Amino acid sequence: MKPVLLLSNGHGEDLSGAALGSQLRQRGVAVEALPLVGHGQAYRQAGIPVLGPTRDFSTGGLGYTSLAGRLTDLREGQFTYVLRLLGRLWRRRLRYRLVVAVGDLVPVLGAWLTGQESAVYLVAYSSHYEGRLRLPWPCGWLLQRPRVRAVWSRDQLTAKDLSEQLGRPVDFLGNPFLDPLLEGATAAGRPGEEPSGGATAASRPVVAVLPGSRLPEALGNLTLLLGVLERLPAANGGSGEAPILRAALVAALKPTAIAAAAAPLGWRFEEGDGAAGPEPASLQRQGRRLELHWNRFAAVLASSDLVLAMSGTASEQAVALARPVLQLAGPGPQFTEGFAEAQRRLLGPGVQCAAGPVGQDNTLAATARMLGSMLDRLADPVAGPTWRRELEAIAAERLGATGGSDRIAAAIQTILNSPKRALQGD
Image (cartoon, rainbow, N blue to C red; front, top):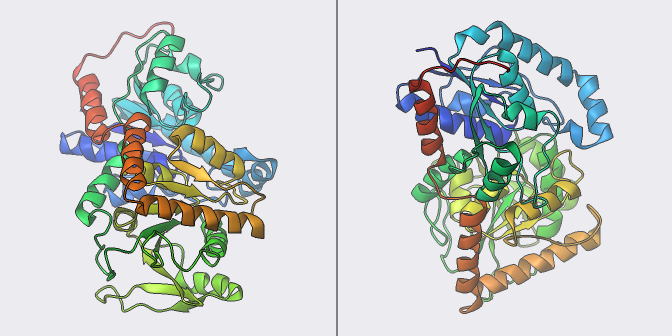
């Protein structure tokens, strides 16, 4: 049988595509991938072949969010790059039995241009944003085409809304980008348990610090987060002990760059004991210590009680684990005030953000106070357990249960095993 092509356009979308691809390969289905943004590292790590050379852009595929971002994309050639990728896809279109679009309008349009049957996991859009989803033109028309064999949404509300709008079934089967994280978190342990390499008292609250994955934005985000941490009161969480602070970092965020950016803020970089040692690298300032963990996101998140985040997909994964999330908006291009506000609408009351201008001292101080209050609430013997139950309900409503990649892979296999449609009027 011809292979399935996974077509995606973003970091979170690549995670979902790689999870789907892994499940399909376990079912004996050949899979290839074409990431339209970035290098598609998630596919490569999963051993899924990626079509041709790929590259990163400074906006991380989010240039459309601002005029400056659009101009940057034009200068760096992102639009022509995507067109070249779609041209490569069109030349190879007859190679594939099915094209699975993961993301938004761009991969949906790419799948339609191949002329092949397709399926769509519409992870980028949700009716939770405004109550009724307004798809960008011509996305709705494309999703109604006969050659689109199935459409899956990212939540149940969106599935109901789009089923009514499109006049066809739209199903919610779960979110594949959660599965690798939840599997890793289960292996790493729950709050109070230490990921390998850590050594602390279980009674102390743990804050996961997530600056994001896109460079150079992640480095700038980290410096803003340090501004919050230095303003955090010395003792929080009701126990009178300072929280444990752990940053989950991508490999591209190098120690030398971190040390150089943190030094002017009064933070000192300390080398760790290596992969086999008990002490990770850290940033230290006046008794405050931030552990630095590279490529151990699942372990850091699993060990946490609360998350301080400037990240997109990672915040969604934290909500899925019923962790309260405190946002800090930045200059972008991804984690801007607008993005953060939209994410709160998407993920519900488990995600909070202090008011104030981006990067200002009063905003950082307000965020630090809110972080302390959230830690106190979690440590309260009555309010804490109640809040955790509320967070678990939010996770189930907004993101669904684990196993989405397996359920969508099963639906894809059903399509592959059924006869191809005689397509007319498409």
